[in-house]
Length: 454
Image 1 (cartoon, rainbow, N blue to C red):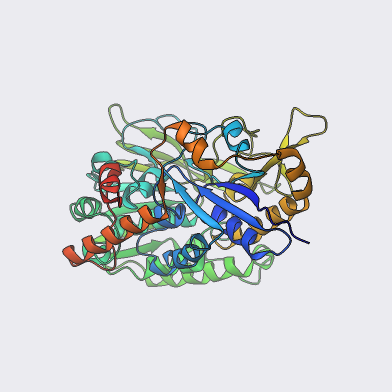
Image 2: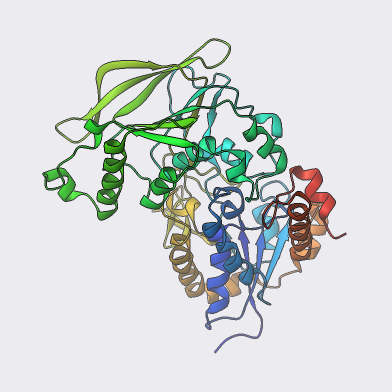
């Protein structure tokens, strides 16, 4: 039998993990619920809006599904509120029975090599934020004034970065890239892109659809060394490889046999190559790399064979990492919040005691792995734990006060779902004005605030 008083849950973060958590809460019938999805931005959807490459229109279409969740009568979107700055955990305890942290993994992992901090050596996450129009990114952050660049990494984000660098402005005109960023890309001097993978093609993390997108570029050739992909599919190593790796190997083999053409830009896929030093004094002038191999124990090892690539920029894309949340336990080794079945654990407690009322979902829970859809089952697991705890959560909370009163005290510039719809409409109008696709993102905090309905 359900209680007439709703179980009040705050979800911190409005990306897929957070919204799927809200969706799972509203679909169940064990408890009546009231869910507030809280984000520091006035725009929802997290990495779907600011992480998925703008030319991946089909993937970005998942926003339509997420939108339906935010329009559920038991769900509210509260934007402009930053956890740890505007609100502390103690503030949330005044209004909610439980809090689910779904803040994702906001920063990049570092290479840990000399010269990594030189101007021109940048995190792929910063470049992705830039071309996706994140309000924290400035137009002048990237000039793309180097003829030759390196992208370090063998995951989908690395492939995205290489593809965006290789495309012409005309190929991107129908996307939602802010116009100033599109203008910078139109003036880009980049002509050669080295995509570096520390291991071989069977160990690469990119998916076949991402790989095929590289092969479909209108203005760029793909170069693959035949000796790096000439692997016997009946041999011992491929036999252990997943089907996805075999598919990648087949695509790469076709490219190697075809060879590059004479298009204006070129992407060189270099496997078994790791960076060891970013060269330069005032800015990047090159990248020293070392050939690698797997030793007898299957561990990556250097061969001592070094090469210098004459690149003027280096984009590191070797993974995302979570950041600590104020007052919430954090594991610096895994860059995640310690948890068991979605329940936050306090490592300082006896045997890793559960933190009552605190839960976690998404990348901050499991690390930066999986695709967007992975967050759905992940969130459902956390919600099951939360619902099992509901009687104890109700008993411990006592009388709750409206969150509006708490927000009034914090002084944040609070926005709601109606404000987001105003931004959404403004971006559609801008696309119409520019003759560009369905939407063009507003750029920066000033433009976003200017579009708010109030």
